[in-house]
Amino acid sequence: MEKKNVLVIGGGIAGIQASLDLADKGMQVYLVEREPSIGGRMAQLDKTFPTNDCSICILAPKMADCFGHDNINVMTYSEVSEIAGDAGNYNATVTRKARHVNEDVCTGCGDCNAKCPVKVPNEFDMELGMRKAIYLPFLQAVPRVMTIDEENCIFYTKGKCRLCEKACKIGAIEFDKGPEELKLNVGSIIVATGYDVWDPTPAKEYGYKKVQNVFTAMEFERMINAAGPTGGHIQRRSDGERPKKIGFIQCVGSRNPQLDHPYCCSVCCMHSTKEAILAREHHDDMESFIFYKDMRTFGKGFNEYMERGKSEYGITYINSDATVQENPANQNPIVVYDVAGKQEKMEVDMVILATTLVPRKGAKELAKLLDIDVDEFGFYESADKLLNPVDTKRPGIFIAGYCHEPMDIPEAVAQASGAAARAAELLSTKGVS
Ligand SMILES: Cc1cc2nc3c(=O)[nH]c(=O)nc-3n(C[C@H](O)[C@H](O)[C@H](O)COP(=O)(O)OP(=O)(O)OC[C@H]3O[C@@H](n4cnc5c(N)ncnc54)[C@H](O)[C@@H]3O)c2cc1C
Image 1 (cartoon, rainbow, N blue to C red):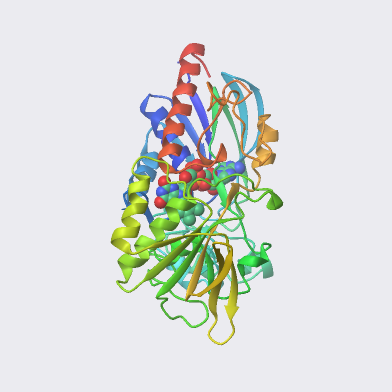
Image 2: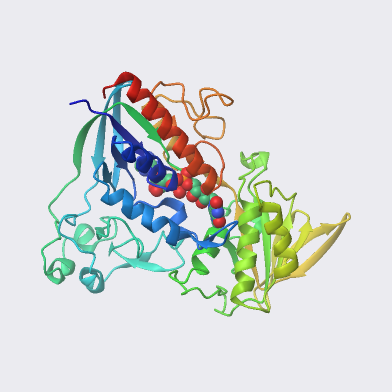
């Protein structure tokens, strides 16, 4: 029988969409995700612009469809370690890290987690909360299976403990299991590895990690989320109080040649507006000020969204670069900005930094492995930006989502469907994998 197999690397919204499109066409998909769950960044967001729909409510059914699809083999906690061959006939090696929990047995009940004595900062919550060494990354994680983090587990660091093993009544813990290698033969590959949030600590003028009540936008997304580390309460680091006046600073690290990020991250005008709207929806007395270089609300309905932010939610937009100082008496951030060439200062209760977004850690190494090009910022390069935007220089390897260039969710979904269509076209022409 003819095989029409596709390897999708990265299980964010782009990788999920590409996998579903291909699987619905009858192709066999191997979806390889580095983290313990699929979902990517969209799983971390609270609501999504421009509709303010609940992000995980839209994403979770797609994650479940992907996992339950007869034609999709979801491999989490896994990475591609070798690629050889050509379009229509690629041989891939996938390394599956040891989760130390049997995926076929674990029900995600949490008995093990309750007994685990180790607490470490929770990366899904941008380290605003803690998780255990045996953990489910988030409530809607797919697969709903625990993972033991070897770096922090006492059994792996000190050779004793095994409390989780005692707590697990169905015997799902597998301390002795090591990593596995899988060999796949596929006709085509779609790369959808997404973005990382740039750490603004080196840009000292914004006060991140120095001024306590300065947060990144992704931290804010987790904070305002009902399932997040504060249960949806917006809280200052210094005293746990709820802010009444928030300053949002745009283009932090973006459009800044000194920091090697001269590009626009393309989503921060919209997500800061969204976050200010959500803050006001949480509290009627919330005042928000957005300090911007220029507003790039170019998508369909985006400018109207910003106008509603002004008229219905009282957001004030101030056209200026901004930096942050601290009032030592109350740990309030002080935003320093310019109006008509004159320096002004505004004391607020909290500052949210719309940091730039960069290609994922390891994106360049993956490009090397796949023999595809990256641009000067590390985003994957198209074969032809105009006419073949999702093709790479290597036939049969396609790109989709933020790993290609800055974009929002609807664009990532559209690109994913484009890449899936290109892969399907190639395989139906070649007829084999
Ligand atoms: C604060 C903030 C708010 C936002 N709000 C909105 C919004 O309201 N509306 C909107 O449209 N957009 C919003 N965005 C943008 C949105 O997050 C992105 O457009 C979208 O998540 C891109 O999806 P993706 O699948 O391309 O990448 P990602 O979501 O980053 O997914 C990539 C996946 O690939 C995996 N991966 C990475 N490397 C490897 C590897 N080597 N092997 C295997 N797997 C790998 C990752 O673990 C991840 O699961 C926001 C962005 C930010 C920063």
